[in-house]
Image (cartoon, rainbow, N blue to C red; front, top):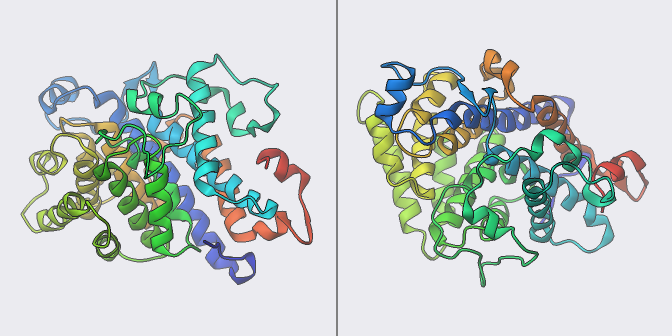
Length: 370
C-alpha cells in the first residue's frame, strides 16, 4: 500500500485534488443534512410535510436547519483515521484498519461523553470539536460495533447479519486515497466496514462505493467508475447482490424520466446495496447537484444515507464549487469539514514535508498524534 509522494504533484493537480476532497466531504454532509429530517418519513409523509414536490430545501432537524447525522460524524472520523494512518507510517507500525478502528472508537466516545476530555492528549484536534458530541441517533450496529475495543475483521466481523447502509455512508474518504491502487482502496474500505457491518452485502457495498469515489477523484466519469467497481467486485465471494444492484442502477438510467418511484425501487428495503444503487442512479440522472440530492432524499427509505452517498459521489465528480452555496452556508460544522479536508489534501500531497526523513512539524503531530 502506498501513497503518492508530494514531489509528483503539480500545483494545478493539488488544487484540483483539494477541490474534490472538499467536494466529497461537503457534498456528503449536505446530502446527509438535506435527508436527515425526512429519514423517518415515508414518501407520502414527506409530501404531506413539505408539499407535493417533496423536500426541496434544507429543513429543520435537531433544532435548526442544516444539521448532520451520525453519517457525517463518522465520515469525518474516517478522514482523521486516514491522516493518522499516514503519519504512523514513519513509526514502522503501519496497519490502517487499526488506525481507523481507533478513530471510530474516538467517535464512540463522543456519543457517551458530554464533551471533549482534555486529559486524553492523544485524541487529536477533531475529538475536541464540541459540536461533534451531539448524539444523532446512531444505529445499534454502530454502537455495538464500536462499543468495545475488539477489532472486527473479515474473519471475525462485528454484526455479521447487519445489512444497513451506515458503513457505506462513512466510506467516501477511502476513495480519496488517489495514490493507492483501486483494489487496495476496496480492501481497506471492506476491512473497515466489517468493524461494524459484518454481512458481505454491507462491506462489499462499502468497498464498491470507495472504488467509485476513487475513480471520480482521479477524473474518471461516473459510468466508468461504476464499471471499475463492477470489475473489482467480480473477484470477491458474495458479490452478486451488490453487482446486480449496480447493474440495475445503470439500466434504470435508460428507463425514462427520473422519479421517486424508481429511486424507491432501487433502494428496496434500505440495505447497503440498495442505497448504493439508488445513490449511483441519482448522481447519474441528476441535472445538477441540487436535483440529484433532492431525488435521493425524497423516498421512503433512509433519506439521510441516500443523500450522503449521492452527495459524496457528486462532490468527488464535480468538486466543491458545484455544491449549492445556499445550503453550504447553513451546513453544521462546515469550518471543521473544510479544515479537515484541507489537512487531508495536504497530507496526501505533501506528507513527507510534514513528517519524514527531513524532519517533522510539531504542530502537525500535535493535530494527528502517532
